[in-house]
Amino acid sequence: MAFQKIEAEKLSSSIVRQIEQLILRGILRPGERLPSERELSERMGVSRPSLREAIADLQSRGLLETRAGAGIYVAAVLDSAFSEALVTLFAAHDEALFDYIDFRRDMEGLAAERAARLGSDTDLEVVHTLYQKMETAHSKRNPAEEAALDAEFHLSIIEASHNVVMLHMMRSMFNLLREGVFYNRQIMFKQRTTRDTLLAQHRAINDALQSRDPAAARNAVEAHLNYVEKALSDQRKADRNEEMAQRRLEHERNR
Image (cartoon, rainbow, N blue to C red):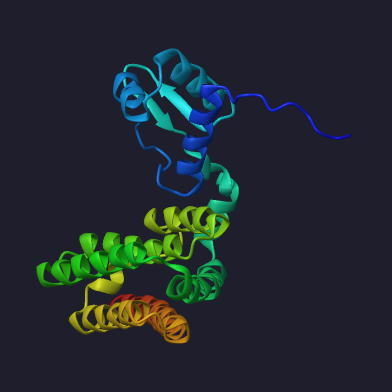
């Protein structure tokens, strides 16, 4: 028969599996420093030799990395999502920008729908807490802080959808967004009317999620990204018009 003896799992294997789950679920993030060996062994209730064996295994598979004199960190596993050549290509073409918004609209709409159905009360509390921080930042008129919280708010919805593939894929996409590859998000926060509209859109998303209304959550996300797409398209046109106006002015001055 196909039965085999049950063998006790090595302690280091249990440690590996727990850290893998934390990375997979996005709780431990790329670039995040792990606690010291002493603290980590105490938290997990394991011996240091078992912990060292587990860490060595995770390092050999590229999930953790040691930085000289600084400790052990979660490896930047998302860096390989796009090659440097492709990132440069994205940054050089408007087509990539609007394809990116289309992609976000599809993925985030689905994530919001799932979060409304599958997110725990704690998941939705995280979303609500980030929205409250956005309201506070709104009164300070700090575009950089607002933009950072905007990204965290959207990522919290993806986390609440409980799809780990979507989570890591979208985190990679948002890293490019933070770096300004697709567009400078701070531009959208400069005008008072735009800032007010964006906050109202995020309020609608949060309200739908807190009400656990999947259809309303998806519609609110799609309406928000439709607005972002139009605002960026209008800005592109305005930039081109200004460039032509500058050329005409220069021509007139030199006649």
